[in-house]
Image 1 (cartoon, rainbow, N blue to C red):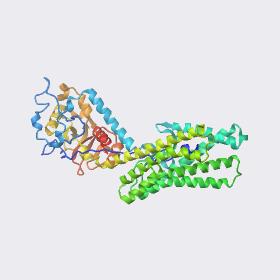
Image 2 (image 1 turned 90 degrees about the vertical axis):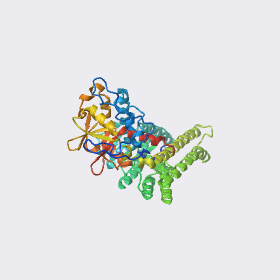
Image 3 (image 1 turned 45 degrees about the vertical axis):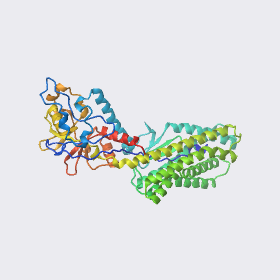
Image 4 (image 1 turned 90 degrees about the horizontal axis):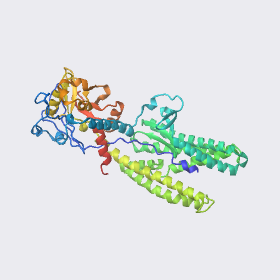
Length: 512
């Protein structure tokens, strides 16, 4: 039963990834100039994306002639970037339902960046007792990293208490009902050992300047959610090895404690159980297959020899899958052949061993597959570039009527509006969802400033940001649109979180 929590380290790596084959396009200029530059607008092709240009319908009776729409021939000279989106509906034609769908998609984008990067602000506040969250019960923040106990832990704690209590009944029958209190203490002490294992990973990660989102104790042990990959194979090896090393040290400490107490007593039985359980945790985690620590050590070795982290991941992941098959078949056979079961092949113990082997094999197989998939997505992460995902923008002054701003955007082949002051300095971004909510007949009398979101410091994104740095920036200042600027401060365009999500989904669906 001790083995039930042996998968105690599958260091959670949240992988931000996105992929796009889009090309660059000219930046917009300040002061109401053509946002597309002198060569006309260009749109990058995007998989399955409807047209989101700032096209508008034909004018109604209340609109000045020429305020909306444009002849399709006027767009013929646009470059490859804008031509990819000419067939869909313009932004001004969106319905409120479509706007709601888009807002939902943009909300999911930041959920995606939180899921893939999840650098949370949790570590910056003090714990005031037990707190409930999506990760479980917050127990504390050692080294500034929150430690959660998942609800599933109580199930395995009860199971360990029942099984270990039965063993105590055979070894120390005089304990009576008190044996279950002692067994519960053993379950808590064992998971405290698992926490030490995970803290070893956490301290090493922090030492290497790798952020750790949290530690979670759950049904099959613990998980340290380290948010970034190690920069070198040497650091990867050390980061993986310190967990089993601490478990071996704990096993040695408990063995030393056994020498100081009488065998066959409660302290002696507890120390023996903790020694054996930590030894099993260490040995099991040293098996060379992902998602175990030994798999990450194997990945580091192959990475060092090949020079490619992806090669190491593939080797360790497939070794992990092979290991899952060995566990599924070999564990029940080994326990039966070794005499650890008393009731034969058809007995309850044999069935329990087979079920446990199946669960462990499934966890290892799934973990190996997830590690392989995440590594392939991470390999494409550098393709997520602010410059290639940015929409061309037209700068307009705050008092500009919406209809006039849309006309300028159409002429420039742009798909976003930036409100600037008299000197051409950006002040705010006109929200796409707000444009959709304005009826056509009111647009000549609505100033763009009333639909704009004020630019905060974090909403300015350097055009050269890419990969993890880009996702970190978006996570730090959640918004639906961002102003993308060149190093000189010149306006390059507007980055929509909806576009980031679509690029991420495209990477997820791209064949390996």
